[in-house]
Image (cartoon, rainbow, N blue to C red; front, side):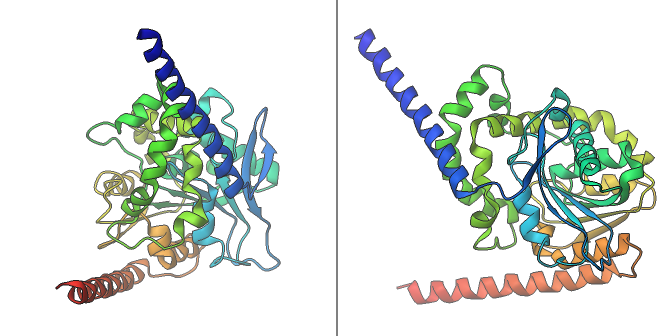
Length: 349
């Protein structure tokens, strides 16, 4: 009886591990690396580097994705509308996408900021406007503090930069643990995570509409690969202590800074993080957009690009553009509500 039970458990574990390994390979076939690996001192960073165009009107731009993401997220938002306007670098953060994790310091925003600075050196990018979304905001802030000579400007999009009440989701804590985390990520994360991708990406955009092709274009499933998920979990688990210790240093940032946030962000509380940055960074400008969730990079791309132009010294009224974006968001919400009402009216007996 006991032998049969152990045999059943062993079979289930082997099946789960086999499924995870199979799906990892399938995900990588579906979403192959679109960047290029560069040695930054004993490990490889992956990035998609769009070289300086013949007649740029913006400085170089470096894009840093958030938690659970990869370089495709910011690439899909900004590469096309900024085509031929600037040299652009879309980075897989250390341990994410196709970048190797590297040193132990890369489990902290400061280490990842240093890794991006090394990558810029390898690619000949002397300075750039640094754009950080969500978790990438903590790295952008660390970059501004640690590498001011490379920072032509800072643009924060729905950033996570300050201590917050409560902890992190249980699965991050479990995945970051030494032994149980290794088992959890190789047995359970893949089957559970695949079922949550749809609703998870919808919640990131809420209350705004997620683009229909967002999953296909940005490859969020890449984070479900065991080691990537462990790296992501370690990042998230370490963030609270890190920002608690380092947020007081934000006042050292002297570079031009703009923060774009939504007042309906359920992922990162704008009253703590974005307002905190505006308070802590002298001379920064806060742009708050009503009814905007956690994805200003996609929902208000035009405002984000105008902020880059502003950081480059061009005249842009960001508050006026934000007001126009609010009208656009309200109109889209009204159209969605109208379509849902019409659908209900047709299907109601």
